[in-house]
Length: 207
Image (cartoon, rainbow, N blue to C red; front, side, top):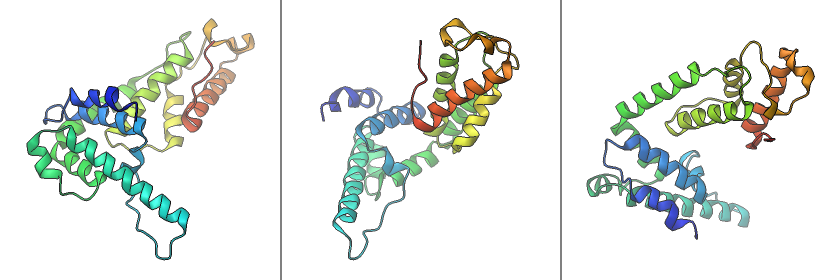
């Protein structure tokens, strides 16, 4: 793939040694997402069905190949000692679960920090909805990378709780002027933007 060199340089410059586990895990998530292999660390290893159709065989083979690539990325960018400890493991998921256990204290501390930042985030009146929603997405993504499981509905609810009780729309948000004095409708508008971002993986329009 053309993206191989620039992306893997992220990991090559930050090989897993132990103390840098959280940063390494974040970088690995970026690379696996960009290369299209992340699904193998979030889905169960599939069993090859008997009397499988051609489509089922292709889906299975795709999963196996993606898992092999993910395992290679994980093993290539860690110390030799860690390589020897993990190279016999059957899947990328098993490797990452083992690493998570090994460095659980780092992972737990980072997760607590991210969760605290998320819960303490509050949108300032008159500020950009765009910037606020992106900040929320960044914190939630950080928690996901660290292993936290927060369903989409809860993510939206948490985002809604960060909105101020009374909002004055910043001009850059390009919302109807009537929303300036009707904060409940403004909240609904902001929430609709959050829904778009969270459920459709689209960015709200920036004007």
